[in-house]
Amino acid sequence: MIIVRFIEFLRNRLRTVILFCLILLALLVLGDWLLVGREHAHTAAERWPGFWSLFGFAVCVVIIFVSKWYGRLGIMKPEDYYGDD
Image (cartoon, rainbow, N blue to C red):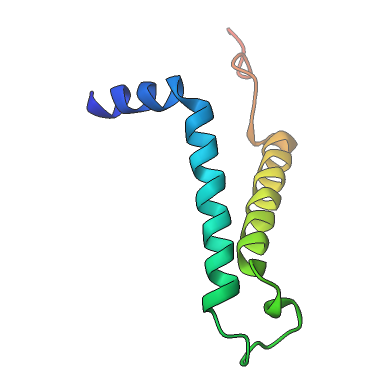
């Protein structure tokens, strides 16, 4: 029950949660830009600050869209698929 109260607490403060996440993301990209060495990068894209964060986000979005598309191909069936026979 404590998790339900925590989720409701966060839901009631959605703007604050979003602002906190954006500030945290900006700090992580800034830390990546200032603290991580780029001497051993394998590709030119790895030299960009926040490349792996953006890459990971893009791949997650692709996985979501592919799984939704795959689900609509036939995995998801209507509730009355088997009929009332």
